Length: 293
Image (cartoon, rainbow, N blue to C red; front, side, top):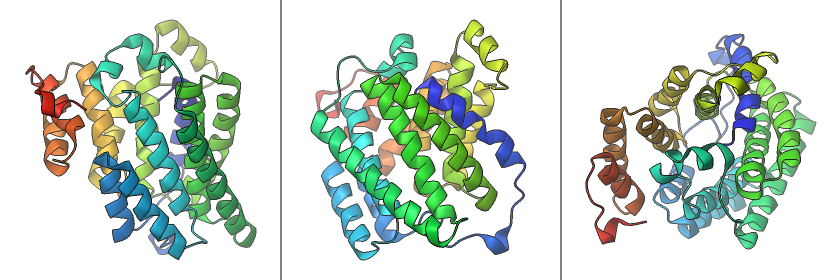
């Protein structure tokens, strides 16, 4: 969620607009079609059963050793878990301007971050192997884009390593342009686009003014609309888009929207205390002890 990553990802907007849909050329890979085993793993992930999610992702990856998306999912599970443990996926974080724009206090769990990095390294190796066979492989570009984006977020939000984060921004930007050229229906990518527009639009006027010199613009309203696009048409990241849009709606004092999305999440994932607690907050109700994440 750091703004630097969002600056780079926002540059994808012009590339996306220039890429007409080519349905006859859409690659049928697990990243762009719904796979039951992966969907089950992501359900466990969003329910905050991180060990179960990783078991499902590991099992799928062992049966599909040439697909980088399994390793991407495993990496995402470690990052999502650390964000959850650090309280990032909550209104307490989103409504705190300092945390929202600058990241967590303290340091992340070192073992979890090592596992996260190992999974990213494996995903990159597999993706680059696919590119060696097909220089336009969209799943490879998707994996490399997500890997760069996740690592940039971890460097900025969790590790506070700004130089390393910037390196990953440049890398992710290039892969994203290639991805959108080959896979214009990558609706899960609109989570990144929407987050980019929203975060940039939330920066101070002076910062936005400086960014405009580089052709970078942010629009909070557009960002929220793009998150809505993933909610409507995404595959694996629909619930994540709902979380982000609900929390953005809390910031924008659009409580009816936040309440609607959080209620949907609490019903879809009744085993999770996070969404029920956030729904209670959005409704202005006290949080029962059993709901506390």
